[in-house]
Image (cartoon, rainbow, N blue to C red; front, side, top):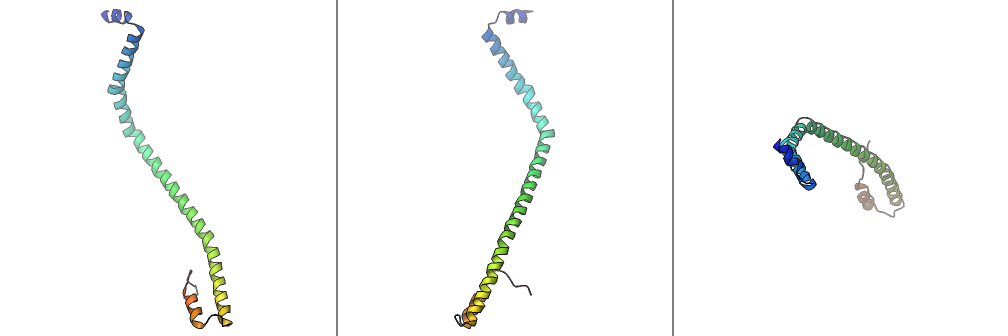
Length: 115
């Protein structure tokens, strides 16, 4: 009963301060420990799995895009390599390049020739 009289005689600011104190105490003593237990037991494994899944999707996408870019680069490079080889042969045939020059140019291989 004395507690009721004490509360009824408090000012609005005093009641507000008491409420804030009570909520802070509840938060520290009850809510935060329970939240942490929940996080450790349920949320943490779920979040860890989601992070692993996201990383895997990102790596797959990156690998795929890298493959696409390699393909886009390889084809034009092969064509340029073939053009250079033909030009070298023609200039060698016309004696613009001597045999040694032709050999040096042909020794520079961008792609290995498949028989």
